[in-house]
Amino acid sequence: MPAYLGESAPALTEVASALCAHLDGILAHPGYAVGFGTGVLSWHAEVTSAAKTKPRRVSMQLRCPQRHLATLSRLEGEDRIECRNRSCGASRGGPVVLTVDEYHGLAAEVIAARGRRV
Ligand SMILES: [Zn+2]
Image (cartoon, rainbow, N blue to C red):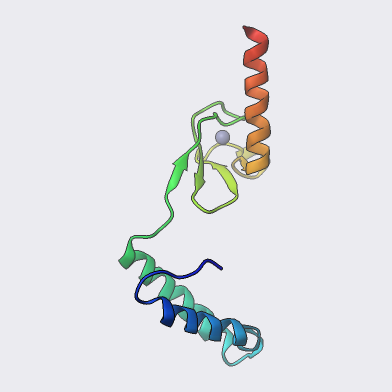
């Protein structure tokens, strides 16, 4: 976990430490788990909205390997790349989803193919 910065750092560190110490017990308790989980999700949505810290969706340079459209993107912080074309992959059960490693492999193939055409 990264170190917290700013004037709220001591309070955040104390709260995070207490939650980490008791999280397994909270989640295992049938009377607390659901309320705790929904409370955290609600709090998270409120904080990200107020702080405008939602992750951005970044367009990728390579085209989707299925439809060859510039529709690949990645949500900051996630380790997968998705095609944003809703009709892409419909016959295969959903849009193209690549891991970062698969994307890099695809990029290497594209670069190699360009080298063969020159
Ligand atoms: Zn696609």
